[in-house]
Image 1 (cartoon, rainbow, N blue to C red):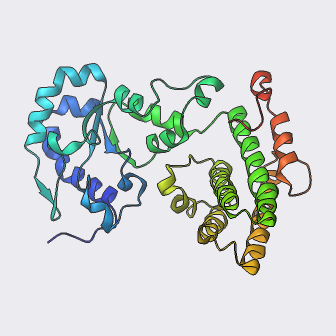
Image 2 (cartoon, rainbow, N blue to C red):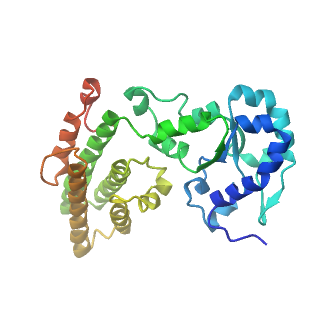
Image 3 (tube, helix red, strand yellow):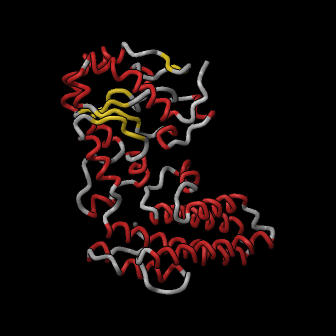
Length: 316
């Protein structure tokens, strides 16, 4: 009978622990150079898997990351060792056979794992960092590394977990301020006054996405793919629950009810005020007030790199 485990990540951690002795006995020199863990695109890597997740690409499995050249050299020996692993664990089918992996688990070249996410090399300059999709950074840094013999995979991971350089961080904060102000504080109430509910819906959506992104930035975390963004925000210590709660309220979209609309506009202003307070708390701005537009301009002006500071404030 399948165990009712908390998450696929913990299940996979236990599966590797059960397989570790066998793998080290079969291929000790390969395992000594490998990183093992579960990182990537699946819901279990973010810790958000549930009963619905089990209908595809779910079950006990782990990644084995190796330098590309070593993986090519040792592929046959590694596959032979993996073929001897159990076909089930804790009552669940495992996913270590080639036809079950879907490119997400099993042997993976370190360079190819990151390149597939749009991170072909470690970012060095602010231009490199701006070119990286944030959801890809969230994927590259989620999950867990169970072991890392060479430390190479973890070197990439630590560099990405260190978060954006200060200038890029401030550039993104400035842009989020501008979008929150434009969509939520200015355009949304004006569209509502005109009775243009379609535009109200679009403005609310723009504001919601910018507000969620702001919450992740203020917590020095990468925002994941939109499917998980609101749920992940509830786990953020700074303004995460408040932001997720407001986004959930906006999803109700009862703009044709005057009392609900007034309360929601007030909630938007309240969140913007809390964001402004947090910007001051983190010493990103000194300006007073909760109108985020001028605060975004102030953050933009604080960027040290002239070329980055000169970019359009509403661009990341």
